[in-house]
Image 1 (tube, rainbow, N blue to C red):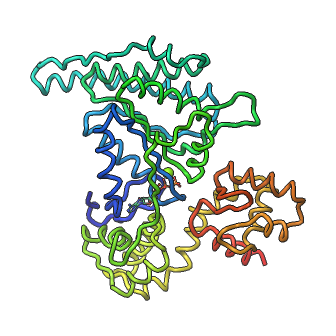
Image 2 (cartoon, helix red, strand yellow):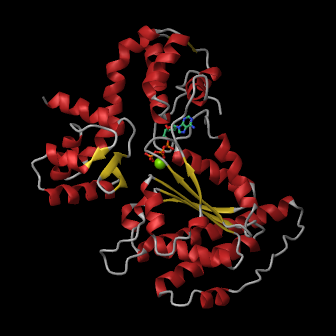
Length: 399
Ligand SMILES: Nc1ncnc2c1ncn2[C@@H]1O[C@H](COP(=O)(O)OP(=O)(O)OP(=O)(O)O)[C@@H](O)[C@H]1O
Ligand SMILES: [Mg+2]
């Protein structure tokens, strides 16, 4: 990708593809191999990482790769309201319906390309009835879901695709709830996919989300440890290295250059986090334009540092706090006075006037809201990088 002349080549945003996707070569190389191994080896991947590390843009790349490899794809960002057996099944049913229409267009396109050479129907060796039988005691909703997934794979093969890939973003919101009677949406999804894969269907599942996803899967009733290939998406490292590339490469399509001293300072401040790299770059770009210069220098950075943090706090952090209830906010703010990392419940209790039970409930809710994730009993971390420093800034502004 190249930026249009004069346009800002940085892309701070949510799921906004960067001009240069740095440092994800290993994952980009592994994914097509995973697809190629299906159906003999189940093509399932779990992508986890903190906020703003680039999970969604990587998932979009996976979609492109899968399509290029001839797979039919559905990519969806799930939302908290989909966290029930009925809701997730309905959502996937609808997405699959849409996808089937797209698949038949693909067949027309493909047969034109092959000059009417018939795209041979690859007969599925198993029928849905066989699979249904093997699922034994599955409930009605689960049967609907596996029927829909079966249809998706069948239509994909009928239309000349290699298989059907389901890519789910924000997948940590789908979780089994042992306190609500019989709500096991995650187990249901995994079980349905597993049954079809065991029957030899070319079905791929990629689940992408916050680090909580991993624990959710481990706790799921039907989780089989070997079902997913796990990829942890972390900060970009190295100077020179991926972090530097992410910052410097977008400039190569422009007439602007960056001083070495400036680069070193930016890399030091952003700690390899992709969203921060894009934000620092975008702000420097605007500042250079306003000043009529074509060089990023440390003095340029000095002049906008406060603005950068103001924008970072507003765009990246504030929304995560403002949507919480007053008592959740209260507790979260008191975690800003605790030592970090990690956060320990004992420490929080010492800094908050809330009862032990209340602190535990609120920590549970902050975890459900995706603000924190649990490392082990009583030990937590924030899901957004450098969030503790943000809380410190916010507390300092209050004092
Ligand atoms: N490998 C990368 N190289 C350069 N920039 C990147 C890279 N990955 C992501 N970005 C940039 O980082 C920002 C965040 O990316 P993305 O929205 O994919 O993160 P995320 O992990 O999905 O975050 P969230 O958990 O909040 O959904 C975007 O502005 C994107 O352009
Ligand atoms: Mg995302």
